[in-house]
Amino acid sequence: MAKTRYRGVKTLLVNGPAGAAAPHEPSAASQDNLDRPYATACTAFLNLWTEIRGEKLVPNITRFCAALGAPFAATTSIVELQDNAAPVRFQGEALIARWGLDMTGEDLYGTFPHYARTRALSNIARAAAHPCGYFGVNRVNVPGKGPVTSHFIQLPLLSEDGATSYIAHFSVEQPVEDDDAPKSRYYRSRGTGWIDIGAGIPAQRPYILDPPRAAQG
Image 1 (cartoon, rainbow, N blue to C red):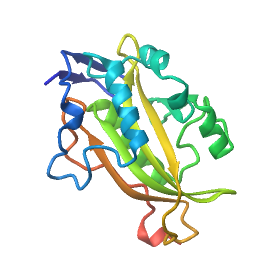
Image 2 (cartoon, rainbow, N blue to C red):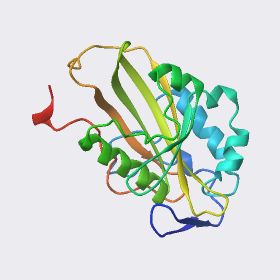
Image 3 (cartoon, rainbow, N blue to C red):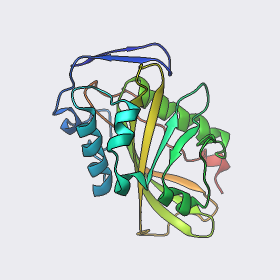
Image 4 (cartoon, rainbow, N blue to C red):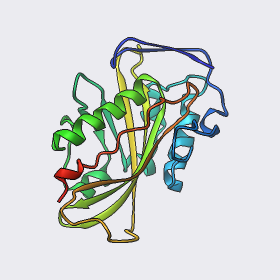
């Protein structure tokens, strides 16, 4: 297994080749999720990321962006991990159209309630630090569009010198299969999990972003 050394969110040094079969290995017994994303498009994005990284555990952002290609780029965003912030460095055209907002340069979770924001930042920080992949299914009430099921996958990237960590976020919308979520809920996690990319996965499951029961409408 490749060795990693972690010195905070911004610094992640990676040595040694990555096991080619790692993304296909099952999740730990403590995980009540699949070892691959539910959506076919998210699995295809994982396969592309794995191909781009080659023998490295985590690909550098320059190589990743050069090889991403238009079909995936349209629904991909890239954030930089900073102290208590995740500024967007790239946002695909389809995502801008979906949300009606270009967040380039803004904190990805800047408009989230504090409860959801702290957990979202913790999830991506662990994905970068471990490192591992992170995927899930969310139910989102999009202003002007109504409820949407969003399948997503997040995978780590590094700067050329390994000093800065990034997260590539790919998502795809699918028709809502039911309408059981209260309309007052903006966000509801429907499933989430880690993906082993060669360094194992965190023992603790990813946080869900639903508000506490007492705060739900």
